[in-house]
Each structure stands twice: as C-alpha cells, then as structure tokens.
Amino acid sequence: MEVVYVVQHVHIINDDEEDVKMIGVYATKQLAQEAVERLCKQPGFCETTDGFYIDPYDINKDHWTEGFVTDYR
Image 1 (cartoon, rainbow, N blue to C red):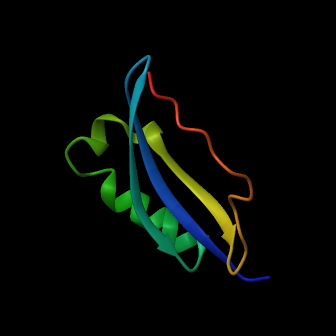
Image 2: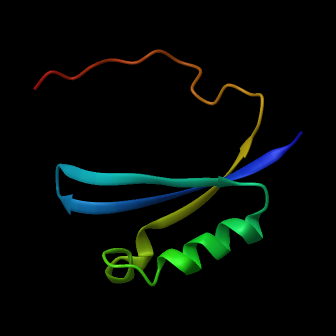
Image 3: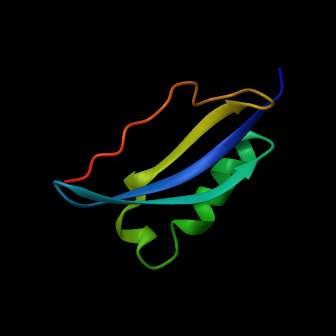
C-alpha cells in the first residue's frame, strides 16, 4: 500500500483550546522532516517546535470510519 506523510502543528492555547495547522502532505518521510526543519525557523513555530507531528497515512483508504457527535456546550 502507498503511504504519504502528513505534517501538522499543534499549539496548545489553554486547557480547553488548541490551534491545529495542517502543514502539508509529502511523498516521503524525509521530505516531511525537511518541511519541519524549514518551518522551525519561522515566527511562532520557532517557539513551539515540539508541536510538529509527522504521521504516515495509507492512501486510498478511509481513515475516519465512524460517525461523529457534535458537543454544543
């Protein structure tokens, strides 16, 4: 199965809130790591370098296979 690598950045704002940024999708893990290295020099990212995540994803496959519930607080 073919795999791509998804790069995201999560910044925790407070106990109830986080800011998730979808950075990009890359053909190899090396390219994903290079993207993180580039962004680590940018404002905001350079203060929160531990917020980067690289996750492999199989392509042509459902990754969310259940329904969802909306929480109206």
